[in-house]
Length: 98
Image (cartoon, rainbow, N blue to C red):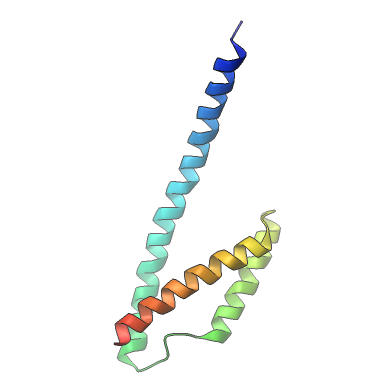
């Protein structure tokens, strides 16, 4: 018979490993996303376009909130997360334009 404390420690290791995998996916996916947004930023800088596109940003927030609801994720969290990402993208775009 397995000791309950050892079993709990084993389950905890398994849960943490299952958390680590999507964390790695998030990092690599974020890196890919920022490569794409850097290309957009260079294009905007080359053509004197504004670093921010409020209409596109609003559409993306709406889309991510919908996806979050479909995925059973708090849409408010998705909105806050995307707002953070958008702020970083805009900061990168502003840097490219200076």
